[in-house]
Length: 427
Image 1 (spheres, rainbow, N blue to C red):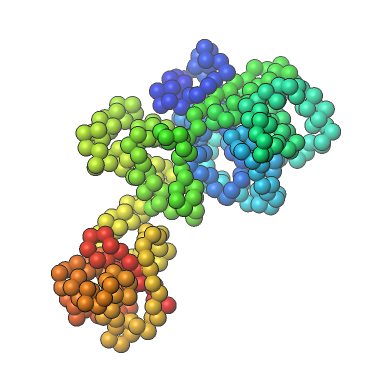
Image 2: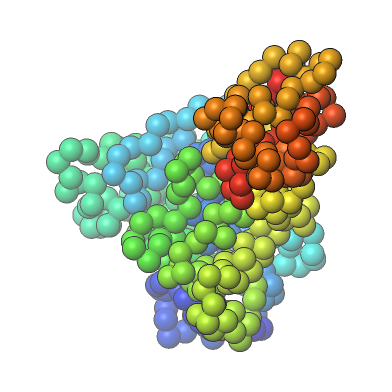
């Protein structure tokens, strides 16, 4: 078996383990089964989930069997770890819809049909729903000393706050996750749980419960939380969270996030999220230091991650959209794609009748789009060769625009100079 701990260590993906001395040797002895849990609090995974997903992926590539646990039950409670306040409780219907939406995203990262180490997808609602309250308290709750639970960071940090408390509902979350580990061990031979560093208390609670209930030795490993070099969370943008679903975050915006990543963070992300080897990453970073303006490391990171999350077609779309924003001719794009690429560009709606008959003069179009403060200025921009329609240079001031100049069903992209864009929409 490959030394997976050595691989994860040079990538700086190991934060803590429950057995630093023996874990690597234990994993190298034979294939093991491990799991990571994801609560379905939204209908998509996000960039923060990439850490655990990539760890499961690397374990599978090393010959081990990964289990993805989606928390249909624990998602109804809400994990207090790393949170300042209680989550909003979701209905069973919403949680089930979220679980269904997550499944195809997981298949991008793991192979669910590759023989003995095929990945497995389970939902803890399937076994938690069968447990009665009294049964759970008697068989599981009695093994949890309250003083030990109070000492866990996820609990203590909330209890020390004066503005928010900790409900009994959240306090019980640790018991549920601990029982998951025991159940997966009994039914699937799972012996290792991985998760973010904020899950350490929950992971060790499961290991302790397994020892008390079944007398078995289980293991745990955490990875760092995904933060930027300045300590802030990675994957947050001006428009919100960076999601893995193309309906929530388009391949173009996903790609652009990594292209624009700070130099201080690009090496870390290449190690965390790509399958590039150590030498290739070091070579990329060396080239980047010589010419940081080219953003070669960021471009490679963006390409590798976008291909993994959105597939080859998603990467092609993202790269094409990037070329368009920097001047490539625009054709065969939908209104939705144009809206996505030019989301931050001013736009104005005009009646479609303006395109009929002789059509809309280019002078009026530049003025109406706000690319010129007057028709005289619009005339000057066009005469000097600085006016573009769909990134094609306008030939003269007599140019008139009609339905043939639309991209998609109703959109026209105008540009003044190199980067001053505006959209005209015709309804």
